[in-house]
Length: 149
Image (cartoon, rainbow, N blue to C red):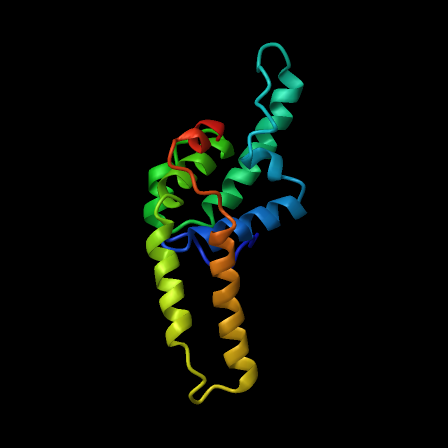
């Protein structure tokens, strides 16, 4: 099952994250990645644990199929979707400043040249939307955002 067209390669975290979030929300599985759905106790609630495990493994396989091989190899032994999601967030969402700078440079150097007006506008809008997605992220220097998760 394809839930995003471009696998996470380390440089496209923001767009990958947005794409995965939309896909999993549409499939009513977003609660697995944000930690809302907690693992049931296998001893106390064996039936619920079995259902949870099946859903977690399904979402886990979807998620693994959206990662490049070197990233898959670094998370393959995680047992929950939430663990992988948090690991990837901590690894790849930290350095937004260089990405923002690159997008701003791409915007300032974008020219129509041989592009049609529609193609030029499409590129321009994509860059503006990507830049806006980074601008909406809160800026924190005290570490409180990391504590909140």
